Length: 468
Image (cartoon, rainbow, N blue to C red; front, side, top):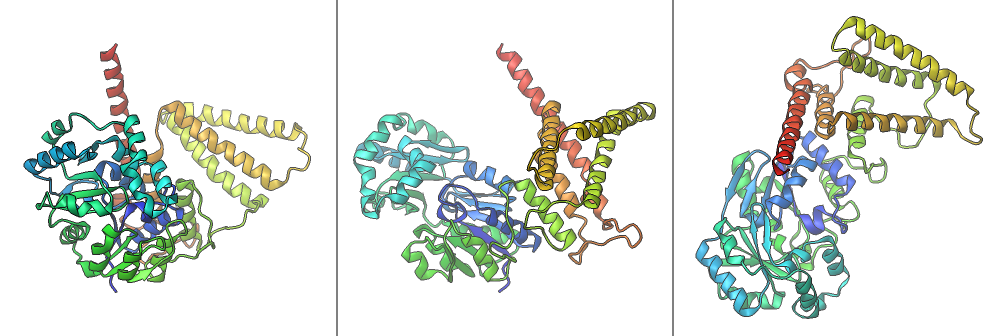
């Protein structure tokens, strides 16, 4: 099957039970992109919630509010706001019947404190341990306790001056059908036991994916989608491959093309591997919680053809080579600090030689810690180097996150069209493809990012002065 795009539901699917994204899932998304497969989410949550994920995971697009608001990192593809009269009717209904509601807008969800609490990690944990038959608790004591802490907004009708894409109403599944009889122009979908999402009739996650496909050149048969809740039923039934999580509802498991492991046990990576979209070897390669480390490890996997999975010490010759790479970067750092002034640069490099001699004498004079092995000593020194590097950025006032990403993309850009690195036959250095300078060289991106950071800092300073 020619899969061109993969979509993930969020809660219970892309997220683990602690509202994190598994390291194996992050690595799988990187590999999907490497294999020219587009990646997005299809969720009942709104764009403001999804936007940080889009940047962190490098998502290509997002179908949010169950198909009511669809966007990419660069543009909004489609929006379907609920009409104002219907919104006023829903708000009036909620007022008369004591129903907590929130309004989903582009900039977030506004209204009921109870609904907002229900979306928090604490509420998700509570929901996961409560028996299903206790979902009615949201209508009694639990609901009243949270209401006292987070009361319903009294001016909810004022919010509908802005476009509203989804209404979230507190209601059990048994109550939803009766409520929806009052609003024939809307339909309800559910992803939890305590509330229903009300959207315009005719929209859905599947319809949203179809709209994305028309823009990006794929049809539903070329889509793989992952889900766990009943609001994913249409999506999993309508795409080429519908993958149910191991923690999915019975209804999802009945319609899914394939059932994978649960969201806490690498279910996404295992399913993608099962269908040949990625190469996933469970537990064969460790994954760090440090995403930047994982990026560099992936670079070495491609360049070296393997990775080191067991901690080991660098032998003297290897350590010398690694130190040489670092010294070269330190010298470039000093050249930049000298602003290309050669006499000043010569003085700085002379100082560097003196610093090396001084450090060598200091180290040799120190007593060797009893019981410390070479691995511990190497790791301790490298961590100090990393700490000093972050400290330098902190003292410069520079956020390295986006800059690291640009440098990583430049390094991965050294892979040739055949998917392999090429090495100079004489120097054995990594060669660069012909398009590297135009498409991957990081200097322009670094300069643009620094200019952005300076603008942001200047704006904050200006606002601070105005407020004084």
